[in-house]
Length: 193
Image (cartoon, rainbow, N blue to C red; front, side, top):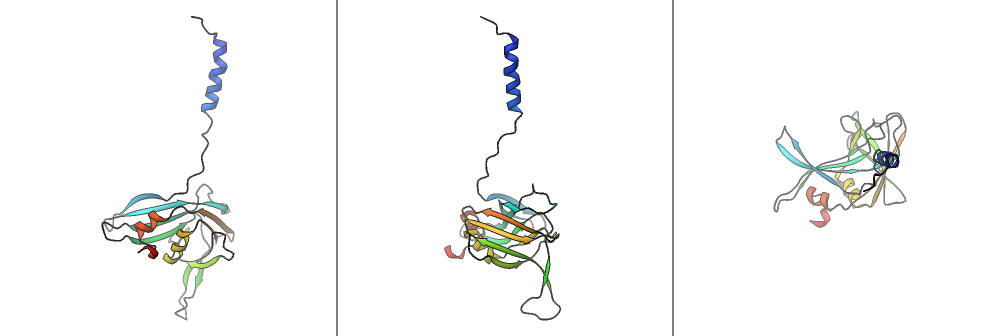
């Protein structure tokens, strides 16, 4: 048996160390709703959380761009013949949002509510939908109304724009997966019922 000179093995070893230190290439994430179980200790209930991560088209200035935007839908799934119950839908952005104080249409006077002006375009529609959503307590998220969530779930792609607290526009895009798991668990699609 012949022995291989050590000098020939050194370049092979160095090459293999160099390749093992390279970061693995990340594949684009499949567009799927990630489901997790959460517990509300105050009410001693368990609920399902569906999360869909999007991407920034125009990231917040000075914000943490590694913190990507996300749709989060919470619901209590049905059991047996009982239908699921929608709890909340939220758009998480991770940066302070511009809050407008809007007078409700029903009441005239000194009542104003904090709102986040949201524009969203579904499947390259010509005109975007313009709505005012309720901000989260930390003012880095906005509650999605159930009717808007129904439209968003049925889309193939959604582009959203909001203003941040620095006066800049933040644009996001979500590639929408099959809505069936969310619609079924949360009972948000009245068409099937």
